[in-house]
Image (cartoon, rainbow, N blue to C red; front, side, top):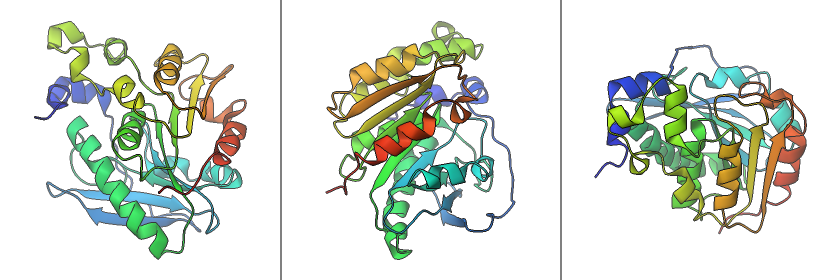
Length: 260
């Protein structure tokens, strides 16, 4: 049974996904990766490489972003000691297909499989951590929960703990749609199974996904190596440019070990 089927109705998908196309190639120093997905989809990832031994962040972006949006800021990630591999959902940027919640969650596993095979072939041998921003946090938490042996760490930026509250902020009434907590992403339940390194980043002034979401995710996780960073004066879309964001990432890097 597909647990995300109720989220795949058109009115919910219109609220959750805001895809836009951009076929511009990777900037100098970056690499584009394409592979065929199911249902005639093509999935695109963009790597901004660090050093061969650096950890790689497999990054799932927000619902109104594409990989190219990180072409400028990627250098801040690499300066913090990471390679940055950005995965695009179906219909976003250079990916093809139609985005749905079910496809987003299935595709995350396919992308992780591809990354685990492709990165060593390109000479990158550092540990791989998963990171998700906003909607993308659901993909990252799914992978960390389901495949802890393949993820050396988990970073969640502006992540969602309470789907019903998010849907209301997006103009939908979960009750009218027949949606219950069992029909959501299940982020709180999933993160309760993650025991590896965890960093939660959340803006103190986030009015779309309030910081209580980040605190709830942090509290639900049993990891002994976890940190919650609520960044002052940061909103949902300004957090990357504020406060301790990259200092926190650099500290998180030191907690990573090569996965078994």
